[in-house]
Image (tube, rainbow, N blue to C red; front, top):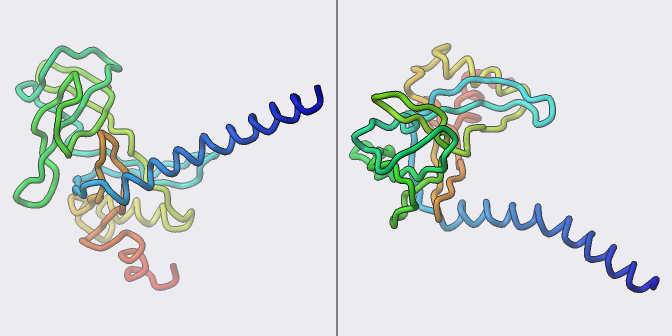
Length: 186
C-alpha cells in the first residue's frame, strides 16, 4: 500500500513538472523553427499585479475587412488569420478562415468584435513583458514621446498556427537598446 501511494505521489509530482515544461518547450520550438514575420503594433502600458509590467500590444492585422473573411463567425469563435509578408517586410492579411488553412504564416486567433465592415480578432501574444523600470518609458516612447508611434513593431516567429514574440522594436531598434540610448542610466 505504501509503495502504491509513493508511486502515485511521484507520478503526480512528475505531471506537475511536465505540464509547464511542455509549454516552455512548445514556445521555444516556435522561436527556434518558426518563420519570422514583422507586425505593426499599437502598444499601451498597463500593469498586472501578478505578472508585472508589460507593454500591451494590439496589431494592425487584427481588424479584418469583410471581403477577406472566409466563413461565418460569431463573437468568441476561433479563427485562423492567414498572412503573407508584404513588400515592406511586414505582415499583411490574406484571409480570415473558419478552419485552419495550409500555409506557413497562419495564426490562431479569437473573434472579439464584429461590424458590417470588419471582424476584429485578438492574437494570443498581446503582451510584451519588460523590466518594471523600463516599461513606462517604453510606453511613453511608443505614444510619441521621443519616437514616431507608428514606428513600433514586433518581430514574431510563426509555426503550426502559433506565434511567439521575438522582440519589440522602437525606432528600428530593439526596445531595450532604444531606451538605453535615450537614457544611459537605464
